[in-house]
Image (tube, rainbow, N blue to C red; front, side, top):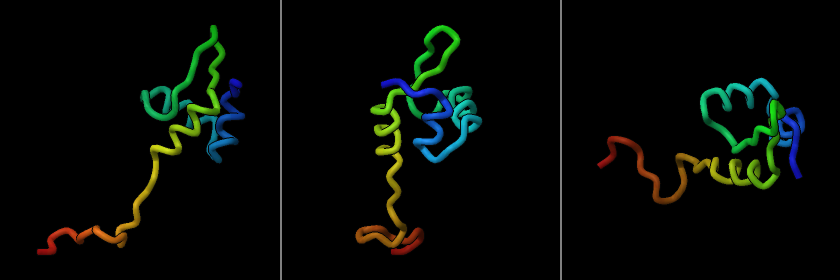
Length: 68
């Protein structure tokens, strides 16, 4: 299933403008150009979000910078 930019933005809790900026900078989720139309696959949006996992600074095994 292909999503329009506004649908992809809504799915990601983002904006169409943010997605447009990411495309311009060659960042963000994969997208497809069908003529002049831009489309996103839900699977690509999920994969992009899965890569953006954040690890808290106080997670076990994390050391403070400068600690010896």
